[in-house]
Length: 502
Image (cartoon, one colour):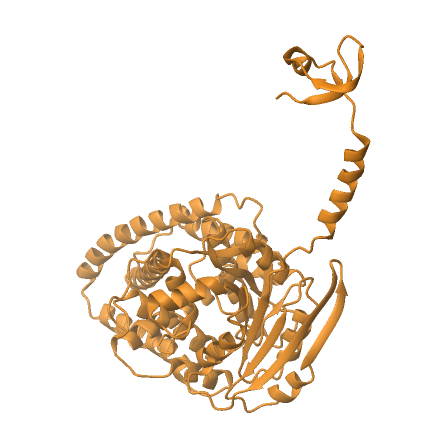
């Protein structure tokens, strides 16, 4: 490029008046251009003016649906007000509540200001008691959405979920970095620091391992998240508006789905957006510390997933059994069927072999349990907040195996409930179970006892030669399934976690 300049030429000649530079001088690295003092002074002024321009800060509206959360709502609000990036507004939507949730949350109502590393931040907490709400959590979420739909992002937080101090900042930074992202879920775990009784500790340890395995599986798949869990997820408001338009809905969450967060995640994906799990934002969710409450929660989740997976079940959808977000669900259900098959076959064949004195132990039988222990250990070691109880759950074999049997009961009960076409309110069933009411949680154990007893009676009536023939066929079939299952566990245990923490 040519231009007028005054300065010193390559041969040392000083030019006092502006002149046109030659091509040779422009190409010569020895040519020294003298800075213009006026331009230098303006450069400093320009940089100061650029620094003074305010940076746009996207707005975040937080909605907290709360149902009988008197024990936890204060901790949730405290954790949100202590964030390094405080939401611009927080709406607590209390519904169908019979405890002191309103009174406790009301202490936080009003403006809040605190100084952070990035400067002073302010928010306002609003507490809404909408009374009897037939649509339960879905109704509370949609009520809250109507209050924050004009903001840039919508943050959904459950009434028993406490985030780490930097969780909101990480979610905002990640979703703002890519317009293709429609929603991001935090990495979920369960706080096990205040538990009473061995049963509660056992169940929470199982849920922590279940969450960790699920989190890591999603993070290793490009951080693509099939379900943006309602416990602590952020959504682009523009994405939600696009979902409403394409789905012909008035509200983002619909009341006729057992898993409102899964359905919304499917719709976000169908609208062309990405659904992700965060790389760093973490939140601690409420766990189920009794068999009764765990059964109700897991049956509701499984039933809702089946409802989405099975084509054409709900009157307002065509069914999307092959939707990308449902592939992981299909895989999970098929894996559960295989796990049930191998355990049932092993028990029946073992009892049968012992009954006719035909049992012979093979040393290679210890390989599958060792592979399972190694995989469970890696999952436990991948936890960000792992502790001694997590390692014991993985290494002692029996706790993880018993928890798997409990999950199988939930799985079977959900499928039977689905095929029986029972018109039951699973939300109400979970609420009842959390209050210590209901006996449905015992059904899987009663059914298992009856099945095993029936198998034992049937086996005793079989002639010895027939029993021997059945064993000669059954053991190779079980062996083949077990070899494939063990190979899959070894492959999963050898995966590199690439620095991710569950």
